Picture 1 (cartoon, rainbow, N blue to C red):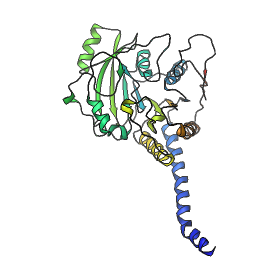
Picture 2: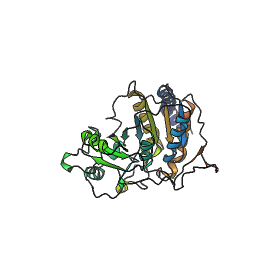
Picture 3: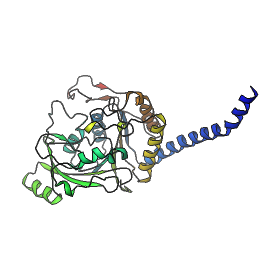
Picture 4: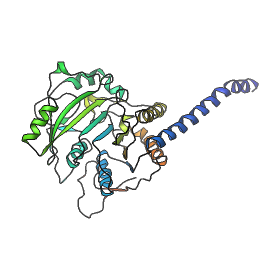
Length: 319
């Protein structure tokens, strides 16, 4: 018994240090969120990523202008080439950004921030470099039409920039070689618009001081199950790793001077490992708590694998 007491006393300072460290980390995260949300007008925590479109609709209905740039922290780009969107059903979780750009005149630039683990995965880098200009629809995951020799997949070192043209009536999109080619195409096809996609990581994401952006965070950016992900890539973290990743993410958003007026936080069941959903949900609720705003959107016209509701029928319930 005496030996047990001695052992407890020996490790007591370590336990106290760890508890203090956890308290400081949690407090710092709250302060980061408060700083990030200094210009915030609308925030929403939702289940499925296409519900971010409901967040945008709510913002417009309340007189908030949709800016040029959206930043999406996500394992997936959520944009497709060579694919139209049926207005009867609306966008899915994997192509909601096509509809976003088609429906919002000012929106024309996406920063897709992929996880560092994804950007440095060798198989993913091969996939990122390979083109597939066969006009069969597929997710934007790097190169589509360019010579592979011209594509640098190391987006954790240098952001990769691509230009696309998107039909604002059908959400159909295809890559072009450069901005000049995009402008020439639009001159001949005025229903199209230019979309610029910058693929990067937290490290290579630029500074956004004095720039208004939409901020979207998909929880599968933090911990990913591998479900419906290119070449089966997964990034499943344990509880402590998730805490560290969340704190790092908040530091990046704060330090890169991202101060959005609109924030959408998405849970993404299945894409997030089932055992991590509760932790992600608590993170989103904490974000809202310290944002200074309330989550006012409780019903959605969209959800995964369901048609968009466009009439007066009851809407899909949120959290």
